[in-house]
Amino acid sequence: MPQVSQGQFENVRLTQVVSGILELGFSSVIEAAKGADMVAIDESDELLEKGFLTSSCCPAFVRYIQVHKPSIADHVSHNLSPQAAIARFIKQKDPELHLVFVGPCIAKKMECQLPEVNKYVDVALTFEELLAMFAAQEVDLAAQPDGLLSGASYFGRIFARCGGLSEAVAQAIKEKGRDDFMLRPVAVDGMEAVKDVVAKVVSKKADFNFIEGMACLGGCIGGPAMINHEMRDKMMVEKLARTGHSTINGSLNDID
Image (cartoon, rainbow, N blue to C red; front, side, top):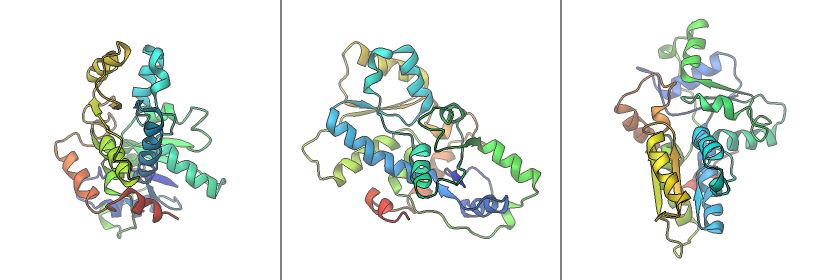
């Protein structure tokens, strides 16, 4: 059972990609954005409890802090990333399933080997590798019928671009009715920007209380294993996101 992220295949609909994955022999497909909805809720809880937090969604960002800035490693969220969060949910329902993540991130291959993740995610593939599988099996995506998406929220689906996680955490706090908490997020993409922001935390000069850290420029849509690296990728993410649930809780209430 693979998870999929926002569309990366030209001249076909994402729903056709879903059907194409099933044609490869997988049993079902679920959006990684469903896991993002779960993470938004959980990270907002942790932020409200601790008062200061950095995200844990990007494994390259987390690894940078652990290796190069261990003095602030305790500030990294203890929550799983979206791929692991939704995989854990699925494995708890059926431990016999094999879970495959598909996305633009090479670092996810490292992440799924971590002991806290590999018990949920079996394999991490890139979009390029999925495309190669379609070619090898001669799956014509344009000829596929429309498959069903799992119905993530707008906020879960915008995790793929820089700033999306911060917006999702703000929405989660809003849905909890916590008007007493002032969220002051900073969203950084690219390692140079990440280093600058992390340095402020180390020197205790941070004027923010939540860091959304993305190693790739633009966020996940700038990942090294994207099939396309174009400005329209962000617009495609936004277009898909607008078809999702308007609230995070609406998405999570819809999961089975």
